[in-house]
Image (cartoon, rainbow over the protein chains, first blue to last red):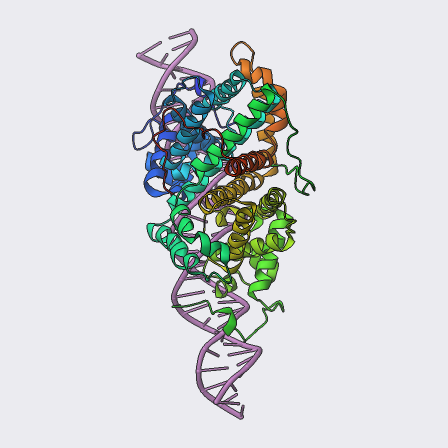
Length: 254
Length: 254
DNA sequence: AACCTTACGACAACACCGTTGACCTGTTAA
DNA sequence: TTAACAGGTCAACGGTGTTGTCGTAAGGTT
């Protein structure tokens, strides 16, 4: 075996499969996205992908060392698409807001792929471009390097994490989604005020708010905290908040 | 077949397995958690669980209709555990911070269960208790009902979403995790300053920050934005931020 | 135009997975 | 004492990712 995968640049012998398809990295990624789109994330398997392409499953291992590699390629394609449709204006806060919402929407447009790709670093072209761009927005806005990185990290992870979360919800069968909404209407909205005063007092809001995505709210909170930080950096005043008793899991490593 | 699972209350004929183990829902959940703990999330399969228990894999289907059911049972146990170990002090911000970190840590301890449970509303006892408690903290702090619900929603979803995200990362094979960290060290940290000025300028911070969880940062940003909101509610002053051009996906529905 | 090299597609096999239908047996209530 | 049946077991089905091996046709070279 030694090395099965040939770097894309060196590929030249384009031999068609038995069924007459000429494979390529692009074609495989495209087909994988289509497969996910049409039949759900569970439909994405090496064997099924091979079948869809009209090729033996093992052929794919000439293009991707393992399934992971394929996932990364898919993820990068998604990033690229989001970045291409984004038009920055120069207002850092509005631009990041717009980008965040676009990333989130992109994830929702490819729910199954989003879940799969949300937690990976691809190290590929589009991802690098995205990192450079967002860091640029923050540094140009006046955030010092360390702060820019921290906020970049939180911003990106928030978009990805909420994207994956909302994608997962959307990927459920319609009936199950309706059932979840019903839980808020029937179970929660009917709890008596004497045992559950806070839920009872806010029931109306819970029913209205909970079945929607919390991402826009979370995004705005993050951005407004960042804006406050920036203000503070420009004209230092009080002391940043310190919790009285730091929690045990403070420095959780991924 | 018709119905294989008997409700736990009705169970009474406790026949031991060939290897002398008396099965129960509790024992199965416990063993599953131990398995995850000891050998990673990938080690949890029906077959391996059966082997660990000293029972035929198919026996488990007398207790859980399918793997999902088992995961939810595990998740419920997690929520309960998190709530039980939390000691509120009366300082809303510190309390929420502590709770958020605990939820996140709980998710990380049991990655597979976390991913599954992050987007489901169970409507079960522990969940209801959690909703009531958190809403109580916010309302007692002085947030008006609508605002309390919005912030509750963002807070919970953020904890769940980041928990799921970081869980997914942690559920990867060790080698793959190391590979991800290496991408930041090798690929990103080596980009030349003339093509990628912002990455080059912050490389040191990226290498240090990116392989860690962004949750603590994101949580603190959220809480500090909430605190600012509270300040504003108490003594109204300026106008809240409005983006110049509202983005298309503003009101994304789950 | 013939020849070599070798990229790459195909095949078969391996070890795993979740799930189910049929069977058998020990426990328990009557 | 006995009959019912809960619940453990077995075997099988159809799926999965992955790899070692082999044949062949495409391409460059002559």
